[in-house]
Image (cartoon, rainbow, N blue to C red; front, side, top):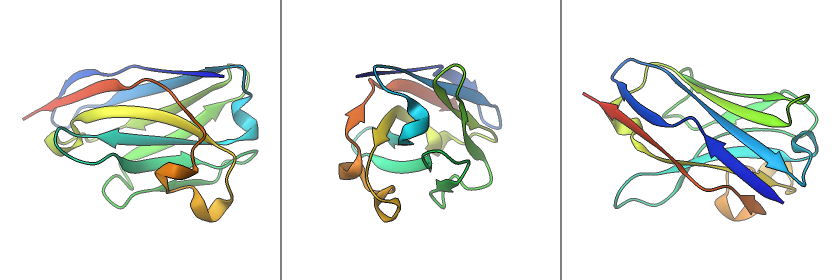
Length: 124
């Protein structure tokens, strides 16, 4: 199983980016797919997730209303659309896949597979 995160870059405050998480060896519709981020000197934190076989999503309070997780089953890809970006959104963003129960999807240790990170930098 491999997850490949892409789409990061440099954007100004208020701008948008869309991250992609493509998978091989795993059907993303069969698992929960989450996004996490890690800023320099900080722990990795939950950003959002989409539940398996549904469009149900969950978000951290810090991104709710600005970020959207979606899935394209035909492309076996999950997206993180990030709008109204702030400098505090600057981090390395990771996608991950989980077979855990619904109650655990905000927990980093519930995720079985991880992609490499993609850097997002928001300039002020």
